[in-house]
Each structure stands twice: as C-alpha cells, then as structure tokens.
Length: 162
Image (cartoon, rainbow, N blue to C red; front, side):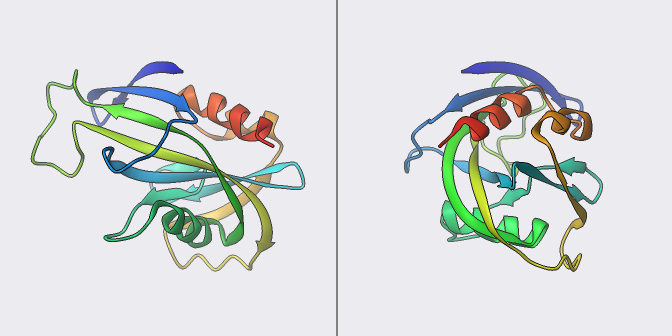
C-alpha cells in the first residue's frame, strides 16, 4: 500500500494504491483500467487531451466492472484477452477544500486495475477517444506516461502477477 497526493485540476487529491483490495457492494468504483500485455510489451493508448496511458474509463449505468474493463480496452486499444484483477486506487477528496458533494465523484471512490493478457489485437480505427496505440517494453512506460508515481507500482504488480 502506498499513498501519494496529486494536483487534479488545481485540487489536492489523496491516492492510495491497495493491491488485491476486495471489491464489494459497499465501495464506489468510478473507473476501470487495464495493463494490457502481449509478447512482453505493454499497450499504451494516446487519449485525446490527456496523452498516453493505460486503457480505461468510467463504468456505464448498470455495467459490471468486468464488462466495463473489456469494453474500455476494446474501445481505446482495440484488444481483447483474459483479465485478472490487480488492485484499486482509493481516490480521497477528504482533504480537498474544493470538493463538491453534489458533483460527479464521491468523497471516496475507487479506480479498479486489471491485467489483461492480450489474445486478440484488432485493427485500430480511432472510433472513440484514443488517437493511437503503441506497444512498449515495461521499462519504457515511465518515459511515455506522464502520470503519478503509483503507475509504476501498478505496472510492477501487473507484471509479477501470474
């Protein structure tokens, strides 16, 4: 478990990586993300207005977490495969003085992370919010993704998962 503070939109947000955290009905999963692996390479997608990152996104109304991760990895990376849960980031706005309790996100929400062993890679059509996809060696990910330091921990946990 590791905690960092980030500046999201000018707001102080606390992020805590919790490997293997149990997901149940009492927690609010706000997004899902996938570390997609094929031939020892990691899939990164260039998302419009955000840059390169792991495929992922928000759950749609009534959608199960596993359905969302399969949909998001297809929509953003045009891949499919076997998924395995890694853990979650707890996103806490408890120290955010600008938090809006009537806004889109809860005071405490969770981002669920999965490993996907890719078995199908489809043509890339740019039909959704991603501009392109690239495959990189795990050691290159920190040089491509401009994200918080928990990204490296999550990638390491995904790679060591059997």
